[in-house]
Image 1 (tube, one colour):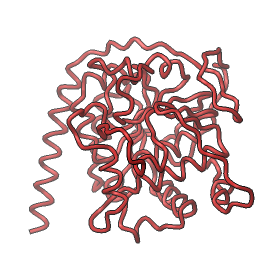
Image 2 (cartoon, rainbow, N blue to C red; image 1 turned 90 degrees about the horizontal axis):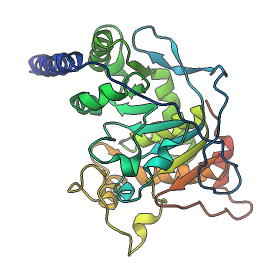
Image 3 (cartoon, rainbow, N blue to C red; image 1 turned 90 degrees about the vertical axis):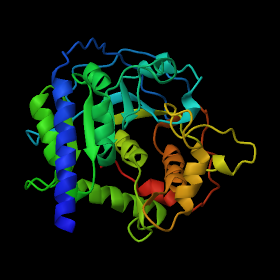
Image 4 (cartoon, one colour; image 1 turned 45 degrees about the horizontal axis):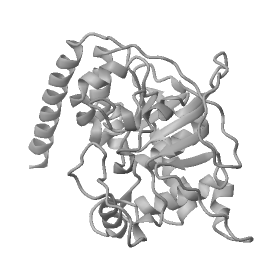
Length: 328
């Protein structure tokens, strides 16, 4: 029974992919992107992002572990300032769009949109989009927005090694190659299995928890923040709450995704996943504790809501993990 079912899934995905690609190919490229830049923030104090000229003649160092889907070459990218835009409902009504677009690089996740009026709150530019294997079809369905940003946007896809294998059996890898062959101007990269192992090892080192034993998956937010540490000198994170936010009795209720206003509540989603023991879950709150700890060491700042991690008491052991974290 497993073989027919597996063939059926493969045929369904292949038909969906071909349909999406046909529609993608039928739309002409009309991209009008402007390169904007922002200053590198001071690492000590929290400050509002400001716009300055950056050196455009530098040569980025190749980043190992992220390879082009066609040529297998490593990703070359570096940004003085990055706006890492979450998908949280906290972004709605904030009016931070222009501020976000002032960063040299704007990083988004999965299929989070910038059109349909969302740009006022989340900005319109996208330099890098980190996408989970499970979100690939949703990204393809947003074909018009994908095309509008494709010539300047880098796409990094992550997924289990079985989906990314290059021997003809990696379903996601095969579909991504087909997409990039039809649309060769799109910059598509995948994360190698060795790099995926490094992400797992980093999570275990920072939390003391083995995500496999705890039956959990790292979130796209974890991959995105870690990738941003490799790419960016300063990271301004928009829409990420502090790790204890959902414990507050009077915390506001916002949707998990700003583009799904009637979707699940963000804190309900976080708590459900954090407490989950059966099935696959994300440890959203645990990850946010790590991010808050990293912000004590690295040039990471949080906006909408605006917050900074409190200083740790002297001789605190919580700082140990952050001191060992290195940009890989």
